[in-house]
Image (tube, rainbow, N blue to C red; front, side, top):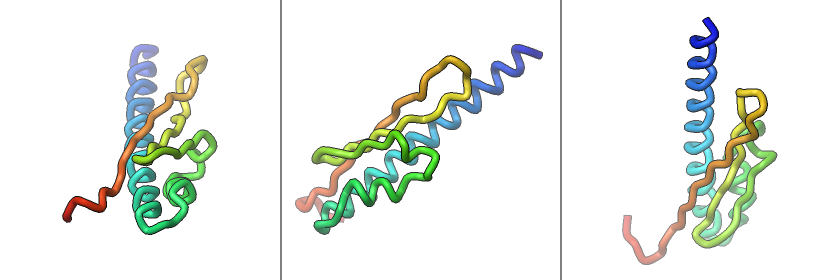
Length: 94
């Protein structure tokens, strides 16, 4: 049984990290779109992230990089940092 609990915890942790990666990529795209039209890139990125992940959010740079910290389900393990970077290039079509 303890092995099954460990495998379940690791599986859930991997799912949370995947969700964090997807969320940071989505936030980076939202921020890049806002920056492209002269808006607040960090504000747009922050609004695209669910509240539980906003605490450790950092957004900066050009291209915009969004970093978040995914909470750990395993006691004694710190939050896991993930990030995504994107930019909208005015020279590309489509």
